[in-house]
Length: 264
Image (cartoon, rainbow, N blue to C red; front, side, top):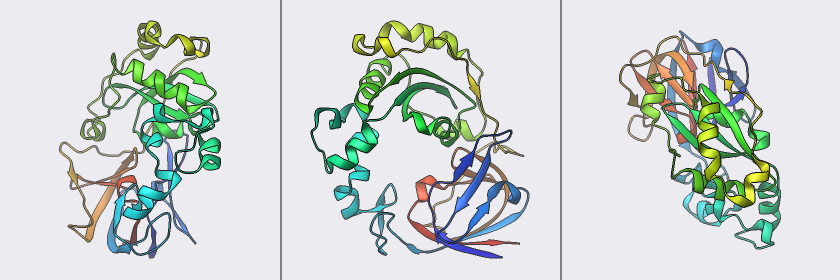
C-alpha cells in the first residue's frame, strides 16, 4: 500500500491514548493502526506549504520567499509579545493578524521533559500540549489577545523554562510534578495588567501517548541526508514517529517535504 503527499503536522484527537492522523490532500492515514508494522518513508520532492511550488524548504514548511513574505510566518508567531494587532498596527497583513491575534489565548504550564511555560490559542487546547509531547499540563492565564499572553510568558520565563528537551521527551525521561503548586509559585510574577485573567480553580490535564517502546537513545531521521528509510513503528509522541531501531522522525520538522509512505 502506498500513500503520497506533502507532510503537515499530524492531526490529533484527545483520548486514551491520543489518536494520530497523517492527512494528505486526498487521503489520510490513522497512524495508531500502524504500530508494530514496518513503514517505508521515501522523499520525493519539496512543496512549499504556502505557494505550493517545488522549492527548497527554508523554515516551518515554507520556501525562503514565503517565509519572509507570508503573514503566517511573522515574528509574532514565535514571539507573541511582538503582536501588534490590538493596536491596529500591521506586521504583514493586518486582517490576517487580527483574526489570529485578537482571540482568546492561554498561557500554560506543561511537563514533557521539564516544566515549561508556553502560549497557545484557546482553541488549540489540548492540541498544543499533545504536539509538545507533554504528559501533563495546566492553564494558568486566559487573556483576550496574543500580546497579553506574550508579555506574561516573557515575565514567567525568568522563573521557569520556555523550552522542551525533545530527546528527554522521546526517551520518556520525565518526572511527575505538581503543576498546581507551580502555578501558585508563579502567580506573583504575572504582570499586573494580566492578573485579572489568572486561573486558579482548574486541575491538571493528563495525556497518554500511543508508545509501545521508548528509545534509550534517539537518532533523528533527516530525509535530506537519508531520502529512503524503513523501520518498525513503535510509538508516536508529540509530532514524532518512534521506530524500533531508535530512529525518530519529526513530522512537524519535515513539513513541506512531499513523501511516499509504503506499508509492508
